[in-house]
Length: 329
Image 1 (cartoon, helix red, strand yellow):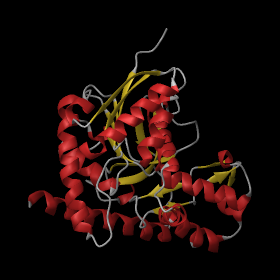
Image 2 (tube, one colour):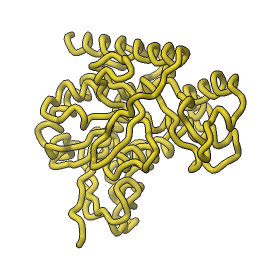
Image 3 (cartoon, helix red, strand yellow):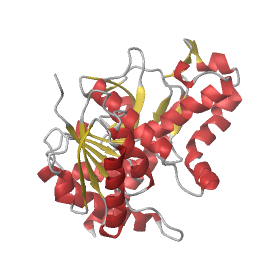
């Protein structure tokens, strides 16, 4: 029996990531090859013509799973009855801007979008925030959409997770599909902690396979932390293809479930697991089943990991304070 279409919102849909993401969703990469979708695309009025061009291309591609396209600059129309919301739109940091200026712009964007989702989206909407600062944008959205369950508001650290898998696979010259259970702890920023202590490759611990702790504890971490900047330097544009693909991975695993024995990284509302501060959106290892994520518990944490996990938590607590200062102004 044919499934009912799922309504998927992409904000900032006329931008680079949006342009890479919408065909992936329409092709079934996010929700499966048997799941019809209706795409809701939102962007700001200056991008309206470009957004319409994306809609034209989606029609021209004749995707069998695509049952409708809403392209709009009206946030209420964009959010109406959506089941999944991928929040790609945000205010990027420009040269010479202070962090507080960027935070202030994004606080106002995410306040408005939170209200629209709360009023118009499906009650069980699943939200993924991609736009930076992703963790804190997700926190703002949670604060201003109190009727959306906190477990339904997440941010993207799967891109960092996938980058870590890729680096291990490249180092060992093995297919990336053989590497699993790396962890990204904390913030989607350069303070994140890519942790390989529980990762395996072909069933063997990664540390045993790589046999170079100096690389794993040094250059590997730096490369994953700074990969976004390296892409900008190489392409003169920020990561788009990989960000879009990771967003699909994040939602697909959340909706359809993670593979047995595997866990992935998601930015979720902290309940204090692993002695992290509660009340922030922090990246943890999770498994997913029946449309819900669960933090993997009981992993041993050594002193070196503890210090790195605490440092990225401190940055998130500081970002939260900055965001709340912007709200109260």
